Amino acid sequence: MVEAILSAYYESVQPADACAALDVTPDEAPGLRDLPAPHWVAPWGTESVEERAWRTRLWAVKDGLSRTRLATAKDGATAFGPVSARKLALEVERTLKLARSIRDKGYRAGAYDAPEVFGLRAGEDYRWFVIRGQHRLAACAAAGIGTVAARVTKIVRREDVGEWPHVVSGTYRVAGALKVFDRLFAGMPPVYAASWVERNRRPASPASAALPGSATDATRTRSLT
Image: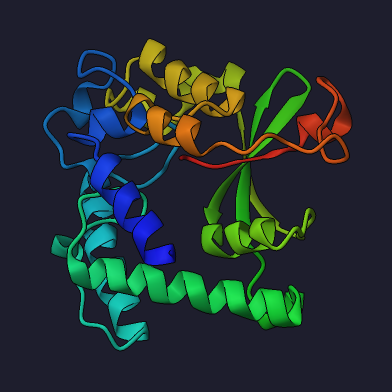
């Protein structure tokens, strides 16, 4: 079942390039024009496009080696398709291992590094963007675990848009940078993934639903996809 779901996801969720991955046009992010989808950079990020591309290739190899499956960036990204059969098998293996461990033993904070997040701040409200630990948090959500301690690495304030590194460098125009921020802050998936999310959305239970504007709502975890 896990393999079938992931396979269907990777087949249907395939941004054409880096601009599509972040839901911006080439005019809104001229520095991302014609780049492969995995080479996107966030407007507030500090690494260059070249550094991001290098790190993406390195992560792919390390990820494969850590699970004794030889893999490279050519096998595809984790967040979206297309992916090779080798990459699909790696993701199925990782997902099942985590889900079974957390189902059988619960989430043990000492057994894993704390997930890393950064805060998106608009006015006095926050959203938390997961940058490390997405698989663990997904497994926790599937197991009904609603709260997990995380390490906050930075706070990105909307009003500082003119000072964000990739706005200063010209990779993004202000309108494009704010478009990325506002979509993530609203918890909206990018266009390339919207239909998949809608088809697979599960309604929140009354017990877990947060009231708009409440403390729970203001600190709800958001991720790229």
